[in-house]
Image (cartoon, protein in one colour):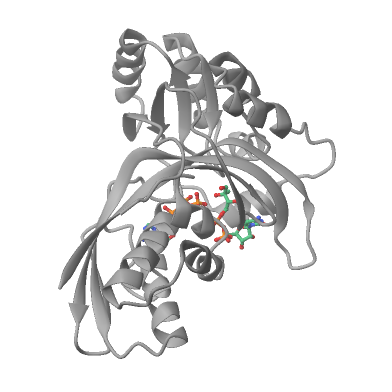
Length: 289
Ligand SMILES: C[C@](O)(CO)[C@H](O)COP(=O)(O)OP(=O)(O)OC[C@H]1O[C@@H](n2ccc(N)nc2=O)[C@H](O)[C@@H]1O
Ligand SMILES: Nc1ncnc2c1ncn2[C@@H]1O[C@H](COP(=O)(O)OP(=O)(O)OP(=O)(O)O)[C@@H](O)[C@H]1O
């Protein structure tokens, strides 16, 4: 038996850090949304107890370090599953890019294995299990658009943001999320206005969404990698309505309404960046598989 599962990337429209917690994580307030850029996972049921990862991308581990592998182990042990799985990952989302590629693979594995192994768990239960793998996994279990709080695992759904193009540009570098949080100076942060962003989404006000794009991790990554700022400036020059780094970076995304301008930005950036994509947001939460 085989099952195909899609694992969409996310961007952070807003990312605020409220403080450091006793467990070492940071208390966050983020607005996240899934985009039409997805890895594809093919799950094949194994009658043996083996968990296998098949990946042809040299940056994606094919052992216990893979977050999809960790998702499978967690479900198998918790629910005493007497079967195995081979997970083939077709990687489309850039790795270590701030787009939650690994987290989304883990979330897709949770949703897919829930079916393949007949576990009958709800999305809420899968999201709770996902939080044990990583802070972004709970959001990725649901997809759509949401406010994420706590260390990122507490999810409240939001409606679809206004329709526009999202142009993503990833420079030739990878960034460690732990490193970025470690270097963040909590004193004197310029906090995003999360409430206004939520209002902008509720009223589908594109201009207001553009004005409130904000990410407190951006300055940390920009200091380490000035080329991220160069990409931001280029996107603005080519005509993006608003530009922001996603998550801990280094991927930069620009929002734009008009098709012609989307083409101009896309073509303009291709020479400078490792990978460039022009995609849509997936909107509000709906069944992913
Ligand atoms: C930057 C974001 O991607 C934005 O969506 C997330 O906040 C990070 O999510 P993630 O990559 O799933 O993060 P995890 O795998 O849970 O944690 C990686 C590392 O980032 C730091 N971390 C992460 C989340 C958080 N709320 N506070 C933190 O300080 C911790 O040092 C942790 O060891
Ligand atoms: N399925 C996976 N796909 C990609 N990377 C994975 C996967 N599983 C584990 N990893 C490891 O995780 C590291 C971070 O990759 P990932 O693409 O998840 O980062 P990210 O997009 O910055 O994540 P986030 O936005 O959640 O912080 C990689 O360097 C890789 O070694």
